[in-house]
Length: 199
Image 1 (tube, rainbow, N blue to C red):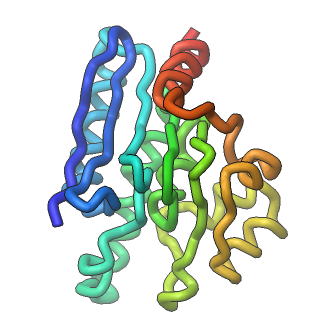
Image 2: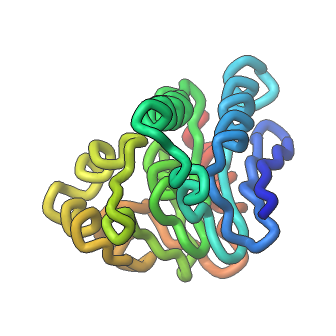
């Protein structure tokens, strides 16, 4: 299944779109490398004041590529975890704001990616979860620290241990997202927020 990251300049905003042939983008390491390069470009040039990350109609990101995870050895799993932490850490510490525009499924590593953004806007159909418990794994990309800081330990524990899903309205009530966007306005609202944060 082909996954890719496309970068589109929109005046002073860098729009990063996570794309996949089936609409369910997976965070393969080669795409994480591309994401790291785009964040470096954001920071190194004065052409962009901020970035927006978005996905498809079906999903923002559906987590790590399970086939990659299944091939990990104890040694390579440590490197996999550190590599993911490094890429997401670069976004979290970015001097220029990065905003997540979330439609559809935002789960596992995809939720970790959303959590490192300066702000998150969701469409009404957004669904958030950390379902690693159903696979006998838990994220190694920092979500176990960032999610409790954002929504509180009890709610985060519920998501991690029960693996349950929450919808956009509940995510808004919990403070996981800052707003729920009107139909068709998700990316435009994220761009406006990114510009406001950059100012």
